[in-house]
Each structure stands twice: as structure tokens, then as C-alpha cells.
Length: 168
Image 1: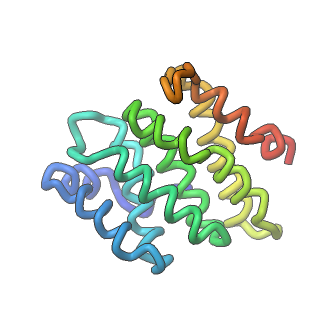
Image 2: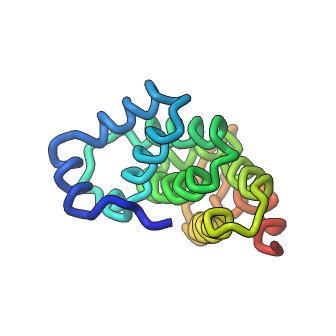
């Protein structure tokens, strides 16, 4: 799922603190699917992986991305963008990765993608984006301490039944 936004826009937006506004807008427009898609396009942009580019709370962004996915899980475009944004945020920040684990976010991604049906290109793209995101999360090697246990994102992906998605 390619972001419709160029990296120049994302960099300028981030430099001005605009990503924080994007996260706030996601929270305040949760029921407006088109607004969620636009916001997730920013959060899913690869430039967010650059620490110096953004000044945002990755945890707040993760919560917003997971909420959008829960509410709009029937939109193939949104599911794909949310999966990429979630992977980017979990890579960027260990607290965001912990939020993903505690919210059972990998299972949410898998369930959302498996619930999509049809041969259309957006569904196929959402499947590809989710597989990429889950594969990226599984290979991250990030270790998270939660509830007295040491987990890895790979464990979370496995616990989310991602193998069902990869077999599709």
C-alpha cells in the first residue's frame, strides 16, 4: 500500500509538529473512514522510521492506528495502511511495541485481513501489506517486558495466528 503522500510532505509536516496533529485528528475523527485513511497514510510513511524526522508520541499513534483498524476493519485500504503504520510505529518505539502486544494487535491485523474477501485489488493489496507488516514485526527482534514476561514481536506475531494469513 503506497502512501499517496510524498516524503517531502511528511518531512515538512513532521518538522512543524504536524504529525502530532495527525494523531489528534485520528482520535477526533475515528468514525470518518476517509480521515482515518489519510492519517494512516502519514503514519505508514517510511520516513517516520527516522527518529529525527518526527516529534510524536508513538504510543498515542499506535493507539490511534489500532482504534482505526478495529472500527474500520471492513475497509481493505484502511486495513493495509493500518498494518503498515502499526509495523512502523512498533519498530520506532519499544513502548509502542508494548502497546501493540497488550492490545493483541497482531491478532487484530490477522483477523481484519482474513475477514476481507473478494478478488479485488484493494483486498489483495491489504493482504500483501499485512503479510509484509507481520513479517517485518516478526523479524524485528525487539524484546518487550510485559506482565513479568519477556516477549518478542515474533512471539506476538505467532500468537496472532499469522500463519493462517501466510497460507492464504
